[in-house]
Image 1 (cartoon, helix red, strand yellow):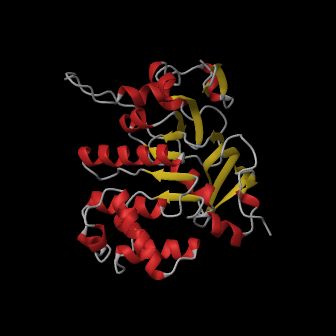
Image 2 (tube, rainbow, N blue to C red):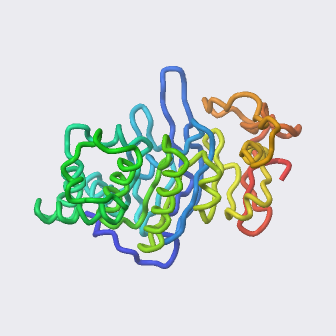
Amino acid sequence: MYAPLKKTSTGPLLQVRGLKSYFFTRSGLVKAVDDISFEISAGETLALVGESGCGKSITSLSILRLIPEPGRVVDGEIIFDDHDLLRMPPTEMRRVRGNQISMIFQEPMTSLNPVLKIGEQIAEVLRLHRGMTNGEALTQAAKLLTDVGIAAAESRLHDFPHQLSGGQRQRVMIAMALACDPQLLIADEPTTALDVTIQAQIMELLSKLARDRQMATLLISHDLGVVAGNADRVAVMYAGKIVEYAGVKQLFKNPTHPYTRGLLACIPRLGNKDPLPTIQGQPDDKNNGADGCAFLERCSTPCSSGGSKIPHLQEISPGHFVRCWRA
């Protein structure tokens, strides 16, 4: 039996080392996450960036050990508070999930139970992980709704999800995720399908709560504007691998991998009336791990080495890593 998780060192809160998560399908092996490593310290926000299908969400589900069949983690370590989550008994992992590590999923309307009042859904988390009575849990649920900016919180406890706006449902998801004061929050596309004004409010709320609680945050997004204003460091993913990893200022000032440069070039800019550039071609399908650079066919400046060997993630300046032969 594992002892309750308790921080015993001053190092990073979360360390992901050589993580490989594969799907064993009838059409072949799909390497959704292929040998990635990163770390997050308390109070820090790391953004995972990349287009749909690059492995961002599977990375987060790997940390929580929630990968659906036929996928599974085949190698690596996920060290959280000096414990390897991949070697933790299922009963202990259930106590960590939703308690010390919480997650905000992409679409709150499908994540919330449509036939349960939101007060009951938040209270369930508190009863399960904090041992509160139903009355105590509902009182705390109202306080959490107030903390995330929902007015008339006590009356809102009796609402069903369909009675709330998209922004309000997202705030309810944040309240549920923060109910047990987690050390690590995983936010998977937390502003998807929200208008720009509500996006800014949600991200400002998450940043404030993270600062106030010294909570580590793994922010998963394809929106580089959101990342620029809220992350401390950025890991750019492509075809299951991290291709660039740097501080947010370093990355935006000196993008080095051609995929990162392509992503940044696609950001709309005020006053620019020219058509936005695109990254030609389609993402690598990640099956069977073909040798060579996965971005070769889409690269604007391909090199002869790209077709024979997979480039290593190399440090080109302090804290700035790039997986490219031209780096």
